[in-house]
Length: 425
Image (cartoon, rainbow, N blue to C red; front, side, top):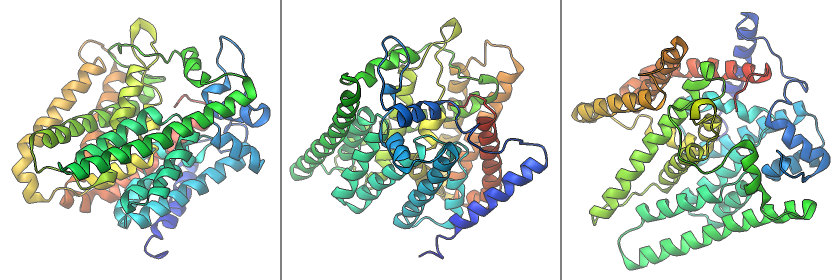
């Protein structure tokens, strides 16, 4: 088993070598340390480690952040660098479990490990812990192991607010995978009820922990307004922080969510109109639902910047740095043979053209004249085409090394930007 999944260790060695090669070439410059791993949300988590939860009225406070990660950090009593190393270990443990459970081929595994936004799993953020908890949830779904599934959902809910995502996702998953028989539908309802109870119990546990320190119940919802995250109709064209460098990345996450939403709508339509239609892969349907629900949540709760534009900053982090995206990408890689592709080529070409036009409208390509906007749009289209190419088995077999190298270099550059204090979250 260890030998079969030893590609994970090989990837780690290649990543370290690439990191120092890029630094020697002058492409990157920062070295990780306590001074630059304390950027952005890491400071909020560290404030919980040092002072527990603190309430101050009418301002941004650490009650917006969930307790599992900072409490683990406090228990281990390590520095920013120390918890970042531990996060890396947690992530690789999670990915190893995922690789073993889903029997991931090494070529696909390397592509999954190189997803650019996964660098968030190697800083003082919740991503690594959330990844491991989500792996437990997904493995529980695959193996039909309820204790593992419920444990993953409960712990993930202590890491970040998940109930408004996990409950609709399990409803969608159980619905489209259920047979249209009374017994099957009753079992689906029972499964949804039990899973929802676990998610709500996790949310209540967070509320109780924060209440014990501050006397405030469920304040993590109210405090979001001080980050300007309130429910509203999104303003177009969309933007993000440091849009000149990162619009392509959050745009790619937005496009992935839009594709997942379309795929989910098609599955639901087929389930409603075809009496014999069911989906057998529960992990894929759950991951699909999670991705489009994250996209919709980020879109409708996006802060508004100048000229009324909604900012989808952080969307890449919430989509790509998760085990749900790993499963989504795993399932679509090599999904089509050449013969199947030939039959559906007009449909796929139409989807690519329609999506390109949709994204051009969403990000203002047609009425904002700026060369950096065009450049971001071209990079975004390049990543979308690369994703489509991975779907085709013969192309994947030849192109995966190039995809792996491009992604890995991008991942390390993004990590360098984070260390250098550039806004990525």
